[in-house]
Structures are given as C-alpha cells and as structure tokens.
Length: 218
Ligand code: AP5
Image (spheres, rainbow, N blue to C red):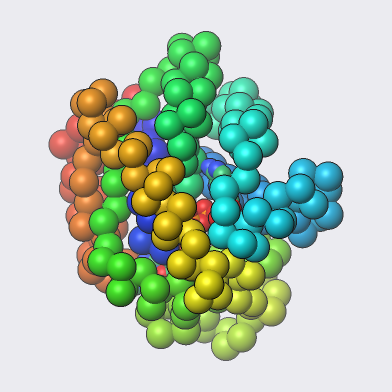
C-alpha cells in the first residue's frame, strides 16, 4: 500500500493515517511530525523550520524533500507507506515521483480529504497534541481519556503553536495557493480519489477503506 493523503490543514489526514497504518501495518510518514520532532530536539533543521511552522508557512522544499527521501530509502518504509502532509507543492510532488522511480516504486492512490472550512477551523482550534509521541486529540470530538494528559504516553497535552486563529488563516491561504494545485496534478495522472472527510472519525475511516478496496494496492 503506497498512499498520499492530501487535503487542507485539519481535514483529518493524520488521524486517518494513524489508524490505517496501525490496521494494515503500513508506515505513516508525516513531514509535520518529523519537523515537530526536530524542533523539539532543537536540531539545526528544527531551528530553521520553527519560524516557518509557527507562522503557518511552508518549510522550504529542499528541507522536506530530504526528510522524505531518507525515509523512503529505509526498506521497512518501502514495503508500504502513507504520506501525510507531503507533497505540498507541485515541486515536491515532482521530486517524490523521481524518488519513487529511482526505487522502482509507484503510488497506488492519492486520497483528497474534503471538509468545509467552518468544520476545519473548529477541528483545529479544539485540537490538543502530545509533544512527545505526536498523538492528537480534540477537546470535543476526540477527548483524551486521561484528561489533560496523553492516553498513549501520559505527557501533558498542548495546543500546537500553529493552531492559533492567525496561523490557521495563513495555513488555509497557503494550502489554497500552493497545495490545492496538486489535486489536478494527481487527477491528470489518474491517481486521485475524492473522500468526504466531514463525518465522524469512524464514518470517514469506513468510507476510506471501502473506497481503497476498489483499487489495486501494491
Ligand atoms: P502538518 O502537521 O502536516 O499540518 P497540516 O497539514 O496543517 O495538517 P494538520 O496536522 O493540521 O491536520 P490533519 O489533516 O492531519 O488533521 P488531524 O488528523 O490532526 O504541518 C505543520 C507545518 O509543518 C506546516 O504548516 C508547515 O510549516 C510544515 N510542513 C509540514 N509538511 C510540509 C511540507 N510537505 N512542505 C513544507 N512544509 C511542511 O485532525 C485535526 C483535529 O480534528 C484533531 O483534533 C482531530 O482529533 C480532529 N478530527 C480528526 N478527524 C475528525 C473527524 N472526522 N471528526 C471530528 N474531529 C476530527
């Protein structure tokens, strides 16, 4: 299974990628998670990325392409992966195509999650994230059983720096300008499937698995 989950910030890509990866034994590759981990560890890459991320802007292509190239070179990822939040520009998509060709692989499907803007803002503003293991919760839709701590690792949950009203606005604008063109990019390659991401987490997951079952997977 080699998938890309595409869609605006907050449509539920990460939530569904986590669930599907656990269910089918594929690896999730989230450039957002990788970058946040680099920020947390204070690496050179993290220090460079933090300024862009906090403002809701994209980190330069060269940085994120390198991260994904490294992951895909690992044979455990080559067996099956779900790319969450990558690619995000046409240039990233072209580079991903090159990396996959070099490794004799191709994408099975690109799933475009669609959720109305109002619901996206509600999801992002109520999200709580674990800074340690990157698990995500929602104060109303997916609360942590442990209250203010992460159910997986008990770390105190936080609100992401880019889940402020101002950064959400920027992220949605950046999505429209730089990422939305990927819909026609992958449509032209016959790889795109549209998915209504507006129902409950369970409903979206059922619809996702039904839709993928109609396509051949590696
Ligand atoms: P990234 O972490 O990728 O953020 P994003 O794309 O903005 O996506 P989100 O994580 O906000 O949303 P999601 O769709 O995964 O939703 P989630 O499942 O969490 O990137 C962050 C930053 O890193 C970028 O702004 C950029 O700076 C940088 N970056 C990352 N990749 C890059 C790249 N390729 N190039 C350049 N820069 C890059 O769900 C959201 C909330 O809704 C949660 O609280 C969840 O519990 C809840 N929820 C989920 N599904 C449902 C549902 N069905 N019903 C109700 N609530 C739901």
